[in-house]
Amino acid sequence: MALKRQQDMLATFSMASMTDVVFLLLVFFMVTSAFVFPTALEIQLPQSTQQTPLKPSTRVYIDSEGGYYVAHGDAAPAAVPTDSLAPALAAAAAPDTLGAVAVYADAAVEYGKVVEVLNIGAANNIKMVLATQPTSPAAAETETVTTVDE
Image (cartoon, rainbow, N blue to C red; front, side, top):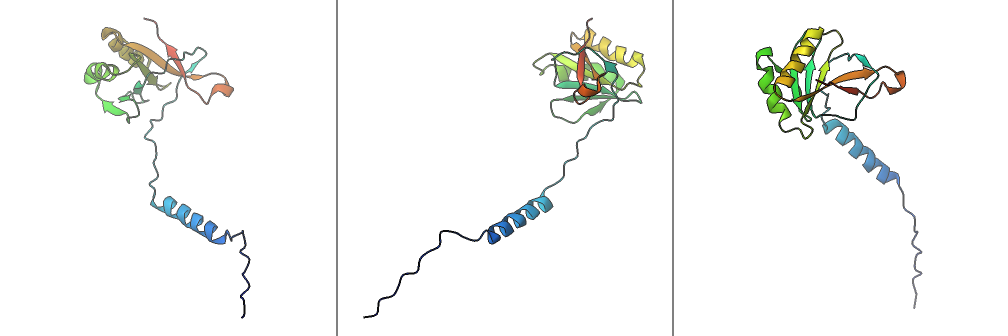
């Protein structure tokens, strides 16, 4: 009677097919995913040496042309006309847990435009904070928020 010899099984396997599958998955997800470009405004913030840990989620932007934009949370800033800025600020500041609004004004904006926004906030009992750029180059990666005392 002829007995068959059992073949020893190898405990290793080839990784070549696994790397092919991973590469194909990587290419598939890169091709099918949509690239998201942030909708940010180009604003050059003024310099400041003071800062506060207060970071409100409601923001008012004043661009270099004097246009107003209001955003809450992660929403994109929406353009707001000057005459409806007060209701937009009141509505945007209401759900904010800090009860404050950050004002991001371009360095080229006239001082009167910033004061106008601060006065609207004061008239509606909203705490306003000014966002500025740090003066030291080491801290340039983080924004500085300066509290405005009224």
